[in-house]
Image 1 (cartoon, rainbow, N blue to C red):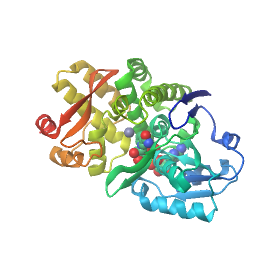
Image 2 (cartoon, rainbow, N blue to C red):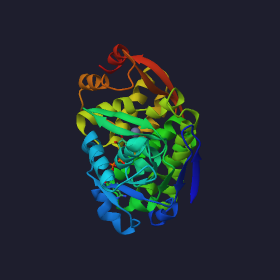
Image 3 (cartoon, helix red, strand yellow):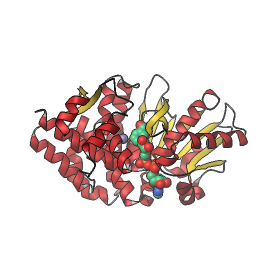
Length: 339
Ligand SMILES: NC(=O)c1ccc[n+]([C@@H]2O[C@H](COP(=O)([O-])OP(=O)(O)OC[C@H]3O[C@@H](n4cnc5c(N)ncnc54)[C@H](O)[C@@H]3O)[C@@H](O)[C@H]2O)c1
Ligand SMILES: [Zn+2]
């Protein structure tokens, strides 16, 4: 097992890569603890859960809502959860985002940890303390920054993950490499076929490197004032694509990165052969790089981005593989480049 500790203003967070769900009880403090998970994970893994109450939610973005929060709060009250109760979320990005937020605000905040069960959440969603829910079609609109005390990352749990969900997780890994680490990018170029076979040793290595990148960015800029914005590479487009097509987050991020890299070439920032490398790698990981969405519709959806500042967005472009930049870009400029 490898541990990465993220030191933050709010609290330190330990990411335990290679730890097992079966060892979870060893990490729970004494006293009451409650699990929050989704119905799928519960069916697959309940036999490995410690013997403590379980709150179950539905699946998918449609359940990343205030209604699910209400459901969780009702159950917490029914279980007589108090300020000393420890919350443990077991699931992918959706369970971790919702449960992390519920734990952060219930009775002004309970201690909590995660067992992260999708590739996407292991490398991204459960690292960095962002949590929250969607609101009236606006993604991740309501939430807080608050770190879990620990995150168990058990690559063995990925064996039961659906192929499409599994591949979509690689988008965030490619993103981390594309903005910060040409070495990891090259490692992925060499090992993508083995990674697709879910080879645990390769996976542990890749997850460790991706978490290291995210952890170092989050440590520098926990509240996303500057450097952390680079982690949004591909995401301004992705959120709009996700919204209008219902694609998986990682798939939309893959298309969003292809679009942002294409604009980077058009802006004379990125060499065409580096763009080609990105597209080749994404395709080799079975990720989509184009979609049929109408650009005008996409721009309209982008105007709903909560990160917009007036008529501008902070877009992330690439100078080269492993080196990203943030540029304030107006909707008018974007329209000119896209339409
Ligand atoms: N907080 C952050 O910093 C951050 C970063 C990236 C993404 N996110 C959020 O994460 C969400 C997406 O998360 P996700 O991709 O993990 O999806 P998800 O949580 O919806 O999980 C995908 C599906 O896989 C199932 N599943 C999970 N683990 C499994 C396993 N081990 N075996 C079998 N099935 C399993 C789930 O039940 C679900 O049906 C989005 O809402 C996105 O906004 C948050
Ligand atoms: Zn993402």
